[in-house]
Image 1 (cartoon, rainbow, N blue to C red):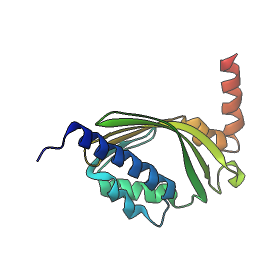
Image 2 (image 1 turned 90 degrees about the vertical axis):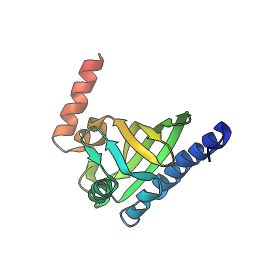
Image 3 (image 1 turned 180 degrees about the vertical axis):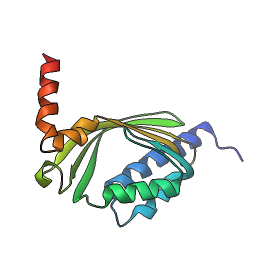
Length: 151
C-alpha cells in the first residue's frame, strides 16, 4: 500500500524527530539505539571518516564516546523535504585530553537522506574548532593563523 504524500511527509518528519531525540540521549552505554534511526546500509561521512554499515558506525561511535565526559547537541535550525533534511547544530562536549577537560563548543551541520530510516548522514564542521585548536601546542598556533587570515 502506498502512503499519501501527507502521510509520507509526516512519517519522514518522525524520522528527523527520532534522530534528534536519539542524539539528545546518546552515550557510550546506549549505542545499540543507533539502529532505531539508521538503516543497516547507512553511509556516514564526517571531515575525518567515511563509515559504511550500521555495525561499523556503532563501533565508530563507541570509540568516539569512550572518553567523552559530557556531550549535548543544541539544534538551531532544520530544513526538511520528504527525503532529506539539513540540521544546523551546536555541539558542546568535554574530553579529559582536550582543552584541559573544559567544555568545547563546535558549530556544525548534518545532511540526512532517508526513506523510513536514515540511509546517508554527512556532518560538516570545522575539525580545527573541534579538535586541533584544543591541543596544548597546536591550538594557539591554529587560532593565531585564523586571526591573521581574517585580517
